[in-house]
Amino acid sequence: MIESLVLAVLAGASLGAVFFLGLWWTVRKGLASSAPVRLFLLSFLLRMGIALVGFYWIAQFGQLQHLALALFAFIGARFALTRMFSAEQKYASQ
Image (cartoon, rainbow, N blue to C red; front, side, top):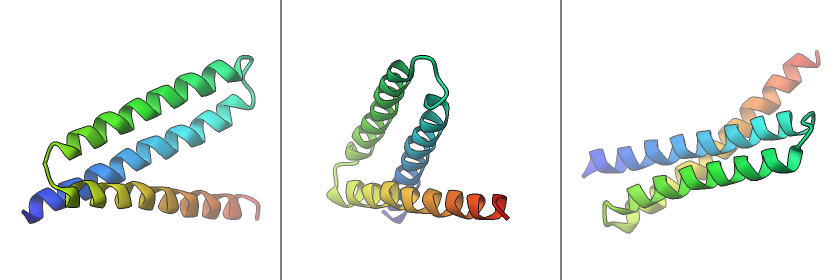
């Protein structure tokens, strides 16, 4: 039981990291791209597809607890990456 909950948290955090790192990469590359609309659209579809497949896989455990933990870990990854990248910019500007 505990192992499956830990796996749900790890899966949610991994999905969040992939989603938000992909978003960060897209914004950085999209600003200098000759076709930013295509890049943003393809990135969105790919990131959303990965997240949906991942959450569908987690939902196959059949318990709402797994899905809720994965969602909280997904959102937690956003806060962790935001903090990490803001600290990185803070040190780069000094």
